Image (cartoon, rainbow, N blue to C red; front, top):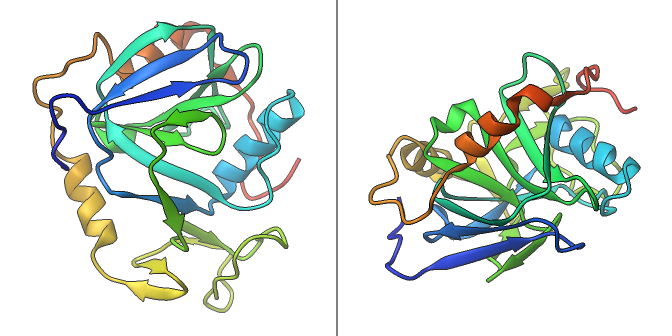
Length: 212
């Protein structure tokens, strides 16, 4: 995991000002990353329909931080695309900005912020042309990434940077996800926030790989 630093803090604040969190520690990978999966796309569509930001012109831009959080203001709700999905996303009840996402795969060690769906300060380094998941059903504005013949969706074995495969990023992130946050400064973490919202989680039960 990247050196957290004693004083490195990131503020995540929604457009209406009713939700604000502070994340302690530098991003576990210095650059943001495009996520082209249909789940991120469906989440963006859902939030847009509720009145949130219009963020469908390009893939989601994700950045991972140590799971070490202080909640400054909260008017949260949590939602899942499907009952059995392992990702829970937390948004503002009023403006429907996406605050963060928590995935069981992270083992409680990191939390994910989609930094074009909410106000983030300081901003992470801009995403390059990296794909976490790829799909053959890109909206026309998405960067084009060639798919194996007959594939609808698959998890990349490699990431793509500036259109060229690059080794090592997946391995780097896996190592970051497997390390525990040491000496947390914050009063809570993403898992605990999701647990508090558990009884009221909105389950959308959308069909995978389809728009709605």
